[in-house]
Length: 313
Image (cartoon, rainbow, N blue to C red; front, side):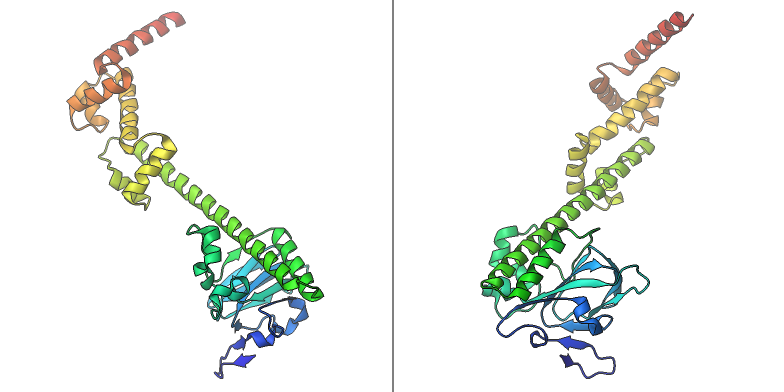
């Protein structure tokens, strides 16, 4: 262990502090090294922490994150952090601490200690291409001892047992662990994106319904939901099955139908009230949508009302 030598110095753990000679991976449980809990430190390797009991606060640089059973954290090379256990919790804080260097997984990146090195690794690129990348200080939330816990436990037992071929088995388990993380974060990000997109389109639809009588442009709607125009247009069509312009015209025609059947306002007045700048264009859109001219629609709606009233009497 090295020290920076400053007044508010941070402990720096090197490979020699934990790794066995000629090994590039190490794992222990946090209660095996209780003096390190609550101590701000950084390390010259990658660390994965999986919590199996209790709760804590994870401090990374100047940020604080709640940590509970089932949560997994990946801490990058040279990143100051610490777990501060919650003594009020019903269970003691216990976590697996898995440490490794990138070249343990892919020897082609020997000499690099950072998590980002795995992004350029041919092994990982061939698995995930560009759709997924490691980011520093990743965290994955969970609610129980699950797939992650099983893999950490297998790695822990292999590392302690040191039976023939244990490093190869650990490497395989670590690969499985990383792939599982990729899948979970990819699924979570997709769900978050879908949720954001659904909210954006819902907002756009509500805005159209509330402001159909005003001038509405695709660019204006895209700006309101903080999306570029092309992406917003494609997304809107994918969700609604209609273009933005078609949806605006649909809402305007629906309101025009309501006014034609319930008021004596002129067609020109209704056209303007529904957001159409040109009466001739209103006629064209209305006929295309309803297969009737506005006057014909009004006459039919009036006859249907009379028939309905006669039936009631």
